[in-house]
Image (cartoon, rainbow, N blue to C red; front, side, top):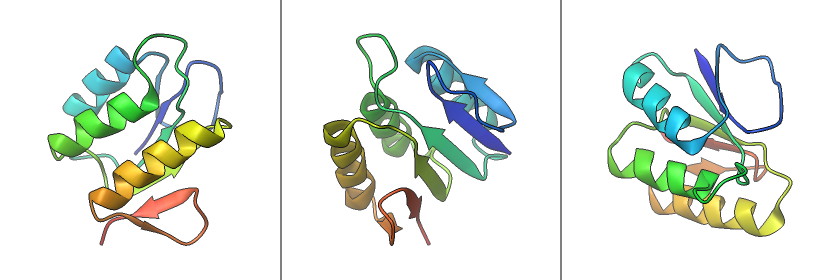
Length: 99
């Protein structure tokens, strides 16, 4: 099951969250079933995709595959650095995997 956390994009995912709060709720409810989280940085509110990523990583709710779908270069770098700190690796800067 794939989860998209993005306030604007519509990607082919099983679950969609438009806000950070909704993304956190879906991560909590479906963490055992999730294969991938597609994560935007700018969610149109105070909390960002970085905040969601850090929250999920601290609680071991993030699946082993995370795809960064943001077009914000600073936000992408911050989320990438956060994922790397939690032992995720990437070859393309978009798809991150934890093995």
